[in-house]
Each structure stands twice: as C-alpha cells, then as structure tokens.
Image (cartoon, rainbow, N blue to C red; front, side):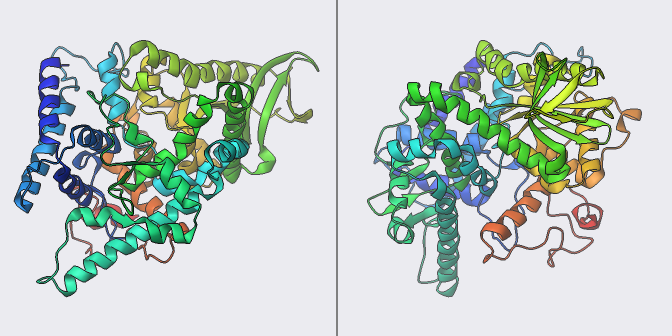
Length: 550
C-alpha cells in the first residue's frame, strides 16, 4: 500500500467534502447510483457505483467537516464536485490493490496466501452491504425475539414495529419523489427543486401513521450540526452514522440519502444496546443471540429440506451418555447430510481497520471453530457405530455416506470467503455463509437436489471459483449453472455484474411482497428492451443472449 498517496487522497477528500451545500453533491451521487424507478429497475454494476461503505464514509467526512461556508453556487459546481469525488474514491481504492508482477505464478490459493492486513481491509471495505434492505428488516423480529422486553424497557422502542417503520418510510419516500418529479414535469419552467429534496421528508405525517415511530426516529437520528464524526480519519474508522443514519435538518425534516443504511442500523444497532448492559448480556443476551441464530438457520433450511428432515441441537453419541459431537442444525437428503454450525460472532471494528490479530480472532470464533466442529461431527456421523439424537429421539442416519459442511453467521461477515481462503487455505471443504445468503439460496433454489448440489460444488471448488459475494455466485449459477469448468480452466473469476441478476430478482419479489402498490416488472420482461438491444445489466451482450434468455 502506498501510504503517502493514501494520506494525500484523504487530505483532499477532507478539503472537498465540507460546507452544508455539499448535501447537493451527496444527493447527486445518491440519484446517480441508487435512485431508480420502481417501473424500470436496473441498477448499475457494482464497479460503477459507490458501495454502502464508501457512501457511509463520504457522509461521515461531510458531517465531520461541515460548516456554513458555501463552495457550491451552481449545478455545474455540483457536477464538478461529484466528478472529483468519484475520481478520488477510485484512486483511494487503487492504493489498496495488489498489482500482479510478471514473476507471480498462479495457484489455486492466489491471491489468498501470504496477504497482509491491507489486502483484507480492502476486501472487507469494498465487499458491499451483504443483504438487501427489505430482506434485512425481515430478520429483525426473529433476531431479537428473546430480547424484546429488555429493549422495550431500556430503549422504549418495540422491535416488532421496526419492520413496519422502515416500510412506511420507504413508501413515503417513493411517493414523495414521485410527486416531486410529477410536479416538475407539469411546470418545468416555473418550478425547480434540488436533488436533496428527493431524500428529505417531513416526519409529522410519518408519526401520524404510528406515534411510536417518534421514539425510533430519536434513537436513529442526530441533528446535522452535532459533531459526531470528529474521529473519522480513515476508511476503517468507526462511523457513528452507521448507527444513526437519519440526519435531522430541522425539527420537522429528515434527510435519508440511502435507505439501506437505515435497514442495516435497525438490524445491527440493538445488539450494541444489549452489549452495553454487561450483566444482561452475559446472563441472557449472549444465549438469546445464539438461540435465535439457530432457529433462523433451521427455518431457512426447512423451506427446502422439510421440517421432518431438518433438525436442531443434534448430538452424536457413542452410547447413551458419551457425546462425541454436536451439530447446531442438520439437514438430510438421501445419503447426504448437511452439517451446519451456526455462529453469532460478528466482525469487530478493529478487524474492519485491517488489524491482523483482530481479524484472526474474529474469524476463529465465527468460522474456524465452526469448521473444527463440523470436521468432528462428520467423522462421528460417518461412524456407523455411533447414534444420532435430537431431543432424545434417535435420528436415522444409517444411509449417510457423504457430508457437506456449512458455517452460518447471524450477521453479515464481510469478506468471509476471502478470509477463510487465507486462514484455512482453499482445500478444507467448508462453505461460509450468512443468514442472508442462506435466505437467498433457499428462496431461489427451492429444490433439495439442486441446493445440495450447489452446496457441494461451492464447497469443493472454493479455490477454483472466485468472486465478491454469494449473490454473484448465485447469479452466475442461475444463468450458467455449475459445469465442469475445471476441465478447461485453472480458475473461474466471476464478474461482479453477475450479482445484478439477484438484484433484479430479489428487488422485484421483496417489493411485491412488502410494497405491492408499486408495480415492479417481471425480470427479463421489460417491454422497452428489444431482443437485439444491449442488455440493461451492462454485460455488453445482446439482451437475447444475456438476461433475456432466462
């Protein structure tokens, strides 16, 4: 890493991102990268837009440097500042990237072997969000089910209305933006508004929907003039906006330029509230978190493998007393056992900064221990002399001769696949997923045979297949299938644009489920796109040879 160049870029960013009027640049980026019509949803490829962490970093620097001085006086100033900001952030990313040398030879473990903290820091920071906003909020209630009373007593907010709160905000913002644009189109010569208006709403109508929303807004917001980001000097520094993503412009108006940040905060922040009460966390919170994680994982797998063939808290015994191994969740399909070890450990802030010791510690507790437990479980399960029990009822595992091992985390664990490849190598056959990954997989591969084969291929080809996240793997699989690529290639690197398939599929399904009043077209059936037109996913192929053939 070029530390000198890195610091120079950070300094220029601090100089550029200041003044209240920079809100127009932030809104412009939000419009260009995230603001899309519900009737024509086609997001940019990941490499053409700021990811959630980059956008959060920009927000943090803005609040850190905000003052009343204005350096933006026209729309041209907005566009110029937007362009320069993107250039600087791109340069910042390049300071982390390893440039292969001519002397480098490719192996299945490249570039995971002998990489340093900066490489992992880049992998963590630029990996993206890990879940969709409407997907994430679905898991808030089951995640904190056993802590609801503590949260209600100590924070005066009801976890069970977080989902409706988010949906109502999303609905209000969509309607607000639609009305603004319609107003402009009707009288373009007489009325104008800035891009920031698209992401600013009045809280009074929102609170009228449910007065309890007022307390949630208070917990997840801060006044724009409050200096909460003074300690942000590096992309890995803790950003308070991650837990308070609602910016209060005045008593009645709030600014939310990127809604997924709010979904993430609603999902993750209560965990930190609970952690502040050391006594409650040690006696109840820690166990509640683990129990909730196992229940969620069990229910997701039961979608595909059925409740009758999916088990929680499984013990493998040599006799009635000697427990050889424990499996958090076990799913059985024919002669195949899906061994799942569930972990509630998350990536700490120190790890996000690239601290080697912290990354290794977090990974140990989140994945490595799961791998070791799964290895013991596999060995014990395949020994026909041992018995398998679930709540003292024996499970018939006599047909089992093959095991697939999974590690599932309750929270999104950024870059977990890359970290696993570095820490465990590419040979150990363990597939590391989050509950959001598992939700996606069980939703779009609902057949037990196909899902089993997906798990098997992904776990046995960990070094061979490479991409950014599970959405890219799944998008690639739905479009191409997992074929015998290893007969032809040394490795297959999947372009991140493969994830656009899941962006479109899940966006349509989640919107139709939670906000059915907004029409979302079927994937691949946009009337405005001709068969011979360039595919809207950005692949460069004709529509009929890309997304249109699905």
